[in-house]
Each structure stands twice: as C-alpha cells, then as structure tokens.
Image (cartoon, rainbow, N blue to C red; front, side):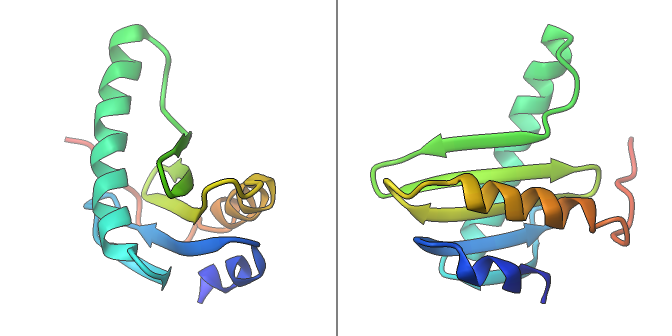
Length: 113
C-alpha cells in the first residue's frame, strides 16, 4: 500500500488516498471513507473559490478541529490526506504526503466536463 509510509507519523489517526469522485482508493486507520468524501467536497468548494478569485488550483489544505489536525494534498486525479491527533506537529505528515503525491502519476487523469 502506498499509505504505509504514513504508519510512522506520530499521532496518526487515519489517512486516505481518494479519487476525484470522493471514493477511497486506499485507507489507513480510522475514518478513511468519511475523510475521502468530505475532503473531495471541500476541494470542490475551494476550487470554485479559487477560480472566482483567479487564484488557480488548490493543491494543499490544512485545518484544525477539536480532536484532529488534517493535512491534505490534491493532485489532478486524487486527494491524499492524513488526520492526526490535535496538537501533533504536522510537518512529517506534510512531507510524506508531498512525497506520495509526486509518485502518484499512475492514477487515471481527471476528465474535465
């Protein structure tokens, strides 16, 4: 599994590799299905905002909730994310996600309508 690299990240709760349709291609830990669907939905809204502002494509998202820190990287045909216990330093997760994202060229390309 591609997500196995993330097993060593301190505080990891769960991780997901999702396709553009929001379905998980791989999950690790708990909450992968929900994380995939919700991040794909969030990405759609952020991309709409980016287009309206002329900001370009959204490629990274991070947010903090009461219990978790979520970091995500988006590519043309995927969303890759990790959820960590709140208060965990997210730098190692961000580095692993960036490295994995650069290796995901074998996924099918997103078809534009």
